[in-house]
Image (cartoon, rainbow, N blue to C red; front, side):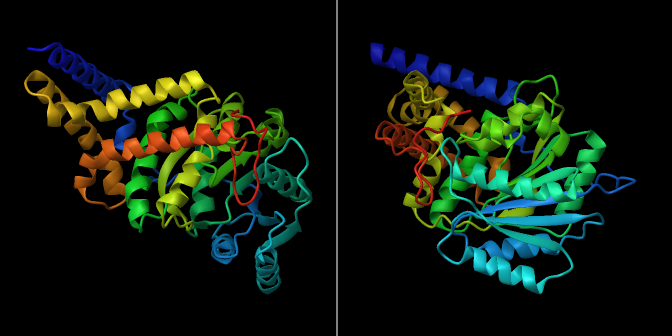
Length: 387
């Protein structure tokens, strides 16, 4: 047996051990079992809620998103604040027409002020929305994106769940659109990788330091938010949802789960659109560290690519060990694929999908080096932080 075969056997064995560790010790993230399946009991008194919706050039989805909030069956006070973040596609006009024609719920459209230094655009819009909402003295603020559509009971469920568990942050991982080929390739893997980074079971454990949230839908206790320093405390964070979750977990328990109640309308019809979405913040996830970047790329190559290469091209023990690791990663991908109603055969493609994500991560670092990091909808947040 040549040294190449020995080396391949060692590499495939390490990969298999890593997958065994991930499967057994990382909060069983792969089961995708933290969801909103059970209905929490209704609180004795329904608290006041202010929904804050930052919107920049969202003309295609803003009507659907706002209508889903206006049609909520929430028994308490629900006020909605749409912050038009200097859109040039008529987003604000659509929202104002909707506000004029729907009196049952309070909908206020705010024209966003110019972006000041030291803020990301979304967080500056959120800050203005929360400031306007203070007039109603809300107990909770619902931070939701303009492309998010809510089922009629989504706010009621989140509030009842927050009251039952004493959560200062309850977040739905919105179900992303998964229609185009680019979406079918990338979206389930995105959710899988996110759960691996932030195991949902660990997020909800008060003694575990893991803190995560999904920015498309977050119900936040206003007292806890103020105690954590408010939105100002994270004003320059690119990954604002998880940064906010870390701060709020110091104030009380938090929760993050999958759902069918909240859907994202944002389309990703091409690979370029997916790359833009991932590359925007991937390097920030690594703290803008070249060392963490190198370690991440090497680690992903070991865990995702090496088993396939060994299974296909190396004879003997290395082939069987590589095949075992490949089959394990395909198997643990299945619950996420079922959630998105995709063929189980996509599980065998996970190594190739991981290779795409490695490329996007390198692209993210390259953009940061060129001072184009964090680019989104015509803005480049050169000095944005990872936390």
